[in-house]
Image (cartoon, rainbow, N blue to C red; front, top):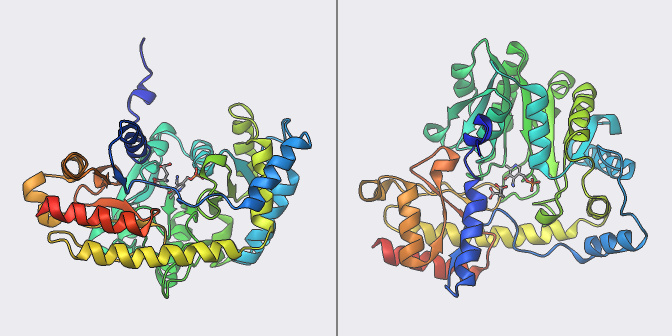
Length: 387
Ligand code: PMP
Ligand code: GLU
């Protein structure tokens, strides 16, 4: 049957495809080491699981309000105050089926044909396709020459009369880079000057290393806050990727329109998953810090192992659970990251995500949401087959 043009043009998410491929190879008995994971390898904390089980037992298995239960919205508002110092009300919040779904609703609600949305590259794989589904045009701002960090100068050079939005993702997937406050202030100034809406995807804000500090562009001034949409969710902070709870915080009229869109597509996110999310936000947060410490240790290990491999280079990540090494020393041989990744999977049984899907064919992404043992063994295998 004929597939619509819009859907024909969407590539499958390469991050999810790699994970599926690893699972398939493992089911065939192959000893694959996977660095593809875009999710914490930790289990969802027990108290969160129990709360969802209790919710099912108590019969919280019916529709909730489309944009999320009042209790969860209250918990999100309380967290926005704690984490950002911003006072928001439930009218500023929509809960969706994952942060990805919130982003999708937001792009469809804000953008249309003729609009340009600035997308710093390397970018998370799903931003450009989602912008295109909305009919708008992603305009890539390449940060590879500026240490993988978006600069106001780079933004300024790509603004046109059609620019309507900009995505800020700090810490970034895939680079792990955090953008400094001073640069965000300059970028915010440009957004105010050119009437540009800011989408601040803060999903990795709690996974930071060393001296890196999270600073939200939304907190610069009330004027900037008024044009910023904060995206966050349960997936990364609380190891709840399968629960599908994410949210967007911003202008109440836009949130209302997003809720209308959601009412005609998915309706509410799963009722008992919302109950788990309430507990995740309201309970003691020490598990988040405990896991951050583990991630930091693994980050140090994987960075040192990557630097041992001739032809690879890396700027150590400030946060997230990704490394995004350059493969420049191997480009002559492989042409691009896709064929290097294929080679690694075939010869070393090691899965990495090639950089093409992130807008950087000269890089690969290795997630360190995996054990130290896997990191050591996997990087040793890569070193061996590249030698
Ligand atoms: N934004 C970024 C930058 C991500 O890496 C992810 C990971 N999938 C998401 C949003 C969406 O997360 P989820 O839909 O699981 O909440
Ligand atoms: N965001 C994660 C990743 O980049 C999960 C998969 C996805 O949704 O893309 O791997």
